[in-house]
Image (cartoon, rainbow, N blue to C red; front, side, top):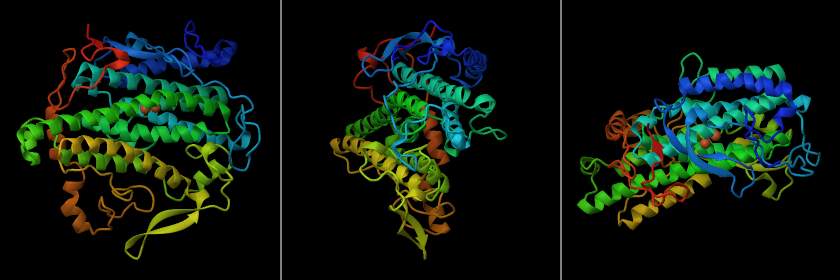
Length: 475
Ligand SMILES: [Fe+2]
Ligand SMILES: [Fe+2]
């Protein structure tokens, strides 16, 4: 069933009406979700009509409908990609078995943990971004922010559906807890550290959607390989929505850079202090934000060596990125992988069993993918005839998880002393002054087609609408 039934209270393509108990349980969760949206969702925007896309089908052609809606009226629902016939468990010790349509008893705790951890990130990012609507640099950007927010809300629905349907009372309790933890809350924080960081300004927002939503892409891809078929189908559809989030990040940073290099060329200046006098963001500050968001995000992949990662893989619960496109035995018992570690005061490569390094495998795939966009940003700077180049820092830089936690590593990958770190960290990570400067530029621009001074307009509008289209009606 690819069409989505919108006549139901909870839109879905899983025949929810046939399972009255589940339907009642989810209809009971729904008002709590809406209350959470009211309390923790986009600030001061309840009454806005926003030009949003809503999923109407899960097939790639024409899956979305665009129209103005008030966000609290967005039709959040449960959409799974179509079931593949005869799908198998494609990796691990159960490789070749029919994919599970129900939770295998022995993997129940691990699967629940995987789903809860993924689910927790979705509302967390909405909370992190909740004040950004107040300082959107244009209507176009405000609309994109809100689109991402409603879709992260839907991703929460996706995980909550799995918890309710397959995990009984435990699942229902976990679904409630997903609404109770809050990003940055001292007593009841979100599970993963990057999701407790603030997203205080739009430069941070674009970096977050470029780097951290891309972590989402890799985690969802790994889960889309799962032998637990409902999880796989859920994640496959989430990925369709996720692509837009990374687009917002990549194009957002590209527009910030474009505006900055235009000013630099126009006034023939390169000194960041001079650049700031024109009310745009200097490339050095962009680099420091990049360093921060990249390093915080690579931590999300977990410890370099992890027996949990090995268990999840061998059990068939979580695969590698593009597992089925790889040509090896998909069991990995005799495979090795090179990881980095610190030995005798320097960073060295070490071969270890691949099964234990699957977090590192996913992290390395992620890093390759994120570098590509940085290259595209650099082409904008190059085209302007400037020598500056953005760089992704070394993966050991500023780490708090894994074997580099507690060590000081420079962005170019040298182990440095505490003293060297302290005298350079202001060049490596955003300073209070950087953040205050960026904050000073933020202010809501509401006139259709107008952009804040620090960002270039996008090349095209949303859904072939003009750039000065009324993407948000403020009422
Ligand atoms: Fe998401
Ligand atoms: Fe996302």
